[in-house]
Image 1 (cartoon, helix red, strand yellow):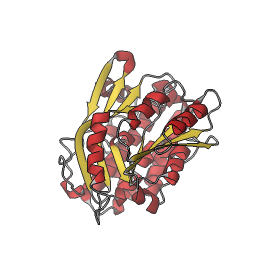
Image 2 (cartoon, one colour; image 1 turned 45 degrees about the horizontal axis):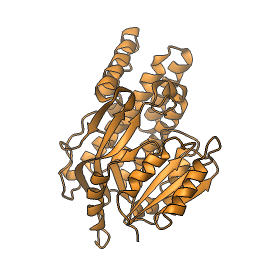
Image 3 (cartoon, rainbow, N blue to C red; image 1 turned 90 degrees about the vertical axis):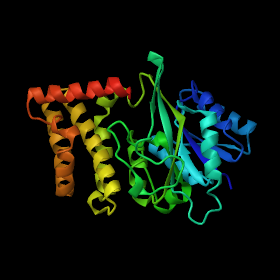
Image 4 (tube, rainbow, N blue to C red; image 1 turned 180 degrees about the vertical axis):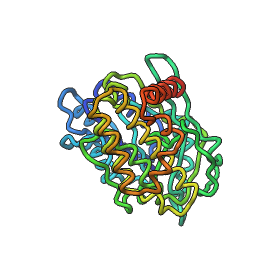
Length: 339
């Protein structure tokens, strides 16, 4: 059995996928890299994937499929995964080999355990290439370092410290047993990937190493502000999925429940802010609809999320409230460099 499966979703990724795959190959031999070519047609993604498989047949597998979007590629990677742990690395990102080797050293110790760690966490780095700057996202104040722990030992997350797809390694069997399936033909599915499985996670381990390098700066990137504006309906769809997939108020552990409330608050804040960037009646209707959707599904959760500090100013029904919400968003954008 391989210790770790890296899934690399690729869609017209020829310009940058080599760097990503080369960084993964440097991690070790007891890994597998599943390159999922998600119906690329505009470049040599398929041929590049096949070449990597030919060079490293014991490590790399190229899987070619019809286009289904990022979620479909992650689903395909999981379906083919034979590694004990599973991690998604987007094709324009890369990993630090030294940090990854340190994580892999811990993962190896779990294979023979009767109750292996469900989720392993490491730091990620925003690599804002156009500004030649890096911002490291750590969890030292949240998680015990280099020892297994449960949700009872988790501290308080700051608003910049949510778990992202970049920071987590899941036990593969956990994802398969819960039947995790991400929506197809939709962006922002990584939010489901780092949200829904948490209710199944019983044990965690944190390594304070800067592993995942998250590239920021491409004009067509899904987190680019203009792109997010054009895809606001997909953001709304994923937020509804989060509301439907997890019964937050039924979660018994208080710390986990609080984190899930906070994460959903962040998602609702993003929806509200982007819908208020362009002042139109349609956008105001959509903003009302998403809040009404949450209220109808769970009034108690709605009240928690609505009164969260992220959403109090964001949704004030005045021009001043709109300006306040947008100003807060752009300030956070400058500080945390998330897009």
